[in-house]
Length: 74
Image (tube, rainbow, N blue to C red; front, side, top):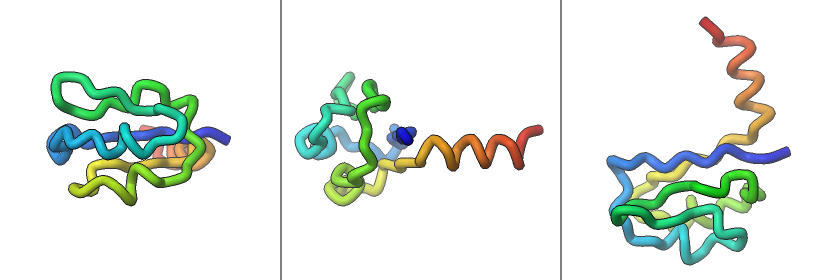
């Protein structure tokens, strides 16, 4: 299936909790912010979402993203 991971850079405080808890090392820390660099490895476990103190992370199943694109394309 696969997932798309997004980190709101405004909300991210660089605590690296997502990095620490992710079993597949989806995140890297760059310039004191979390970046989802390996999104192809995301299994959708939501551990990062649960651990993030600022609710900066969103995970969307790729098939849902394709559905949105089909219905909301401009």
